[in-house]
Image (cartoon, rainbow, N blue to C red; front, side, top):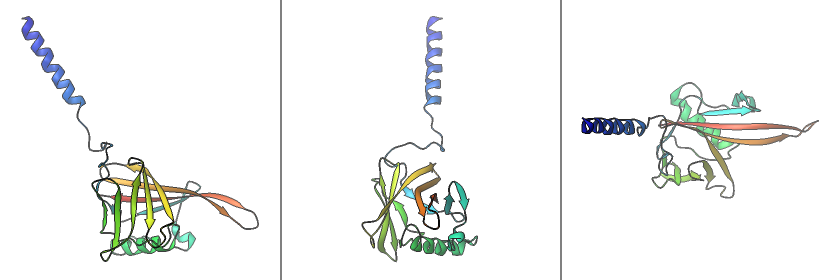
Length: 178
């Protein structure tokens, strides 16, 4: 009788351990390769612009970006990235890949490397660089991350000089899916 009880306890313990060791798809492991994979810009709302925490349309800054038609979204995103806060950085929608060492995601246009997302700080910071302006770089924090979605954000303080000097926080969010 005692041996039967002990085997039942062992079975229950094994069952409990197996239940607690399961991981869900929405909570990815935080290891060096957790962000590896082909990330593509979200078709709608790829770039989100917030001023002082309020979502703002980029058109208010004279920038036309991301129409609802998926066939033009890539071109509009490229145009946005080539003439705005990020500087003249080329973007090829189909060539966004983070390599297995977790360190560099190359952006290329017509097979020519033009810039990249460089990952620093153990998957917590991305750095956008451009070959055209190698001394300029932009750090992006990982705002949200699941196995299927990655949102990077960059927050900067902007001083508006006019009759009165005003300060505003501008936050740029980039939405990627896989």
